[in-house]
Image 1 (spheres, rainbow, N blue to C red):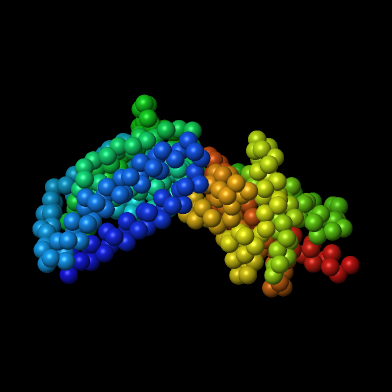
Image 2 (image 1 turned 90 degrees about the vertical axis):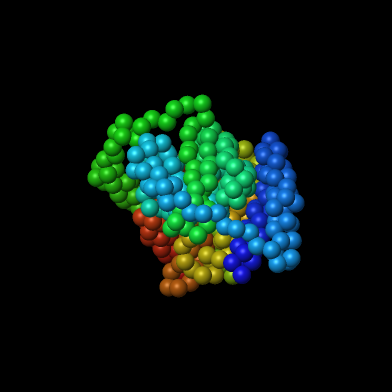
Length: 376
């Protein structure tokens, strides 16, 4: 029975990886070779592993499980305590079990945030399918692997990920130990880097948030707009640049209408025009927020189709290299007046819960400005 359950888990994991490979078809043509290699690797896995396993189960055969080595568990603990290199322990689905201090500094993950989340969320989209396939292969006992990936917040830097299998007595299945290192360079010691100044940084962030709220109130009150589109335009210009790389404003609730799109200055105008022409009803995230009336905060969004597709058919979140987003309803007295969506891209720091609260506050001010127009 245990062998049957294990085979079922392995098959379900294979199906999920195939679905991810299908979604990766929209990556740029230069990255398709990596996706093709991963697809061929999965086909080889089916022919060489899953099918013989299925035949053994149907014929009533069993396979002996590998023995647990207590010394490996002790070695793993020693690595996490002493190794100055970025080290992560994850399962076959890349879900992080442990992340040492050097790894949190290297990836930019906040302490405790990464645990329980897929490590693929920290990687650039073109690398995710191949990385999951290699991790699954190592977990199956097919040997150590090493591949080059790119962190989503620093896509220009090549990172070498070295993977090895690890069996511990506390885990029923084989885990994967990973060491990260910039390709061709040396990782500086975590202890050699200067420590942060949390009090000063927190004060600075708080002051910046207050300045943003003041700027929004000034924009809405100094020159009262005459149309709903003008109100959304004013609000979007306050948020653009200083708070978000992309600002998309949609008006309405039951029937959404795209009013304003502001993007990075280094982006081609065609990409901004694509978003301007996009039907908000084709954006599942916007529709969900408009119906539910609750703010959505996503860091390293897992669903690439959450904001629909651009004119070329590629997911907007991938083509814009979105690393975090905020989608907030413009609500007053329980009525949704519109939806505001903000993107941060590349190496920019992800949205925090505090920033989500600040945007929620400003969204009520914007909604009141829209309501006042209707009363005139």
